[in-house]
Amino acid sequence: MTWNRKLFAAAAGVLLAPVLVVVLPATTASAHGYISDPPSRQANCAAGKVPACGSIVYEPQSVEGPKGLRSCDGGNARFSELSDESKPWPAKSVGTTVTFNWVFTARHATKDYQYFVGNTLVASFDGHNQQPPATVSHTVNLAGYPGRVKVLAIWNISDTTNAFYSCVDLQIGGGGTPPPTTTPPPTTTRPPPTTPTTTPPSSGTWAAGTAYKVGDVVTYGGVSYRCIQAHTAIAGWEPPNTPALWQRQ
Image (cartoon, rainbow, N blue to C red; front, side, top):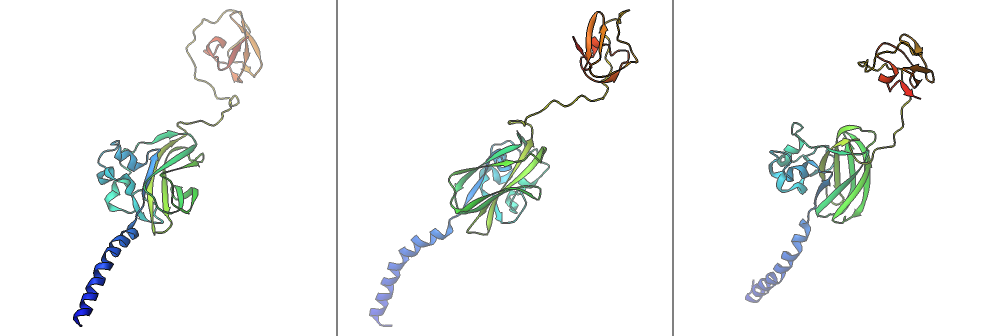
């Protein structure tokens, strides 16, 4: 190589180097996010509400793993505490419809969001392969899962093979706006005997051993009572002592 060619090659290297420094970092962008409310397991750890959570307390947004998993730790050994069912995970009391709120610290184009109870997909929301805003909310109907449940929320990234995982412990039906209720019809279940608070009078039409039906009217102690639940009377169930059976007229 001649001296002129060496100088040209060196100059070309100097000119190209800054370009590589600028371009390469753009390919390493990553996503981070988690459910903040109702508090996910990582959110409770970060808030100090669960002991011995490990490193997740410093980075609740980082539970990332391959798509298709059904684990709270996203298959990440660093966050295995999130899958420890022996820990005292708080369960927020909610109604039968729950709004889950995602917080993103680094946003990425999104394929979809999925919500599982066990292995059952209970809700899915399309991300339209777009970058989400800083927060996203989804309302999910969980009426078919009363009591304590664990919901696994998954944020699937559209342009990588990974997803982000958040497990949320809930007490369904323990709060929020309850569904409308109706008064159940009277049953024939006998109420437990109660200690009489009055001495049976010597007169009146009520009598122990008598089968009464709804609507029957008796007198006791000079007062009239209407039967509101069918039953067979026994001592101790005098009308003044059993408002579940008799209604004063």
